[in-house]
Image 1: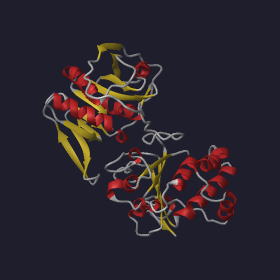
Image 2: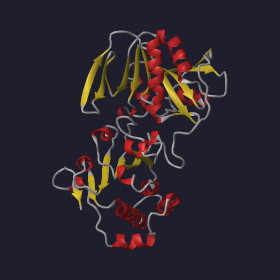
Image 3: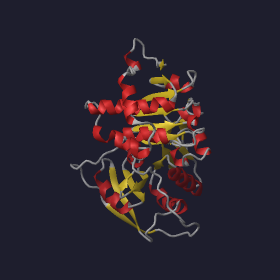
Image 4: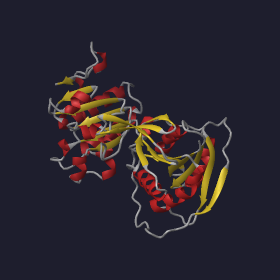
Length: 367
């Protein structure tokens, strides 16, 4: 078995999604890496040290811009006959390229793979994660997109052998589309949503207020990224690439803080892989409180400034890393409430105990 991995890059390095997809590709056989996107040449050279890489394929640059999906698909199809599996991260780009390439080769494509059971047998979620489907392919090559939250991220091994670089020659330009404007998908000053260890999510509870300032303030304080629900995107308060859920991104942070999010199964499908979930909601019957490890029933516009103040108090006592910059990051986003007033309030506030330390492991709603 030989595997071709379409690996998106950003800033001259493989994206976290690409490195996680490599973890899946290694289960199938030796991997030939095809880096694409911003700084693909530098990323390809650096990827030679990754374990499991048999070769790095570098197309000859024809222009200074990244190739559009239809030209990437054409490139993949010219290489497909040499491989048993063609993989890509389960991102917008990966889905589009794999679907196009599979159609050109008259093959089917399997998207959102979360487990590799055999060389021809895969598992993926269905019905917003409520069920699992096991699929067996019958025709080769196989075109797959891999849900990156299901596999570990590969890191360079300086002691390993360097994989050779194979030049592919120029890529034929189809001229079917051209880029008019490039808008960065990442959040300025914050970690990429798909790679953040802490993510703060804002839901419909902020639509009436007309902004996400409290959400961004807490995210800045924690050094995390911001996520939103579909309702927030439709209300025009956030761009679509911040959306998490069945029709958005799937993330796997160590901590997900849900603010004003009801917890529909569509949204929960995007955070099922989170290590811990904390939720604040004014409605004690909100489904998110049942899914959370910690739950707080409270007015968000009062609770969030108090939480930021508590974090600052902990930072002053040396209990939180990067203590000196915590409140500065929060204030850089918005002035949710007076810090001094919040600190006075926080001094008399009882800290929330981890639900896992209780007699049972069930989540608790705290009022």
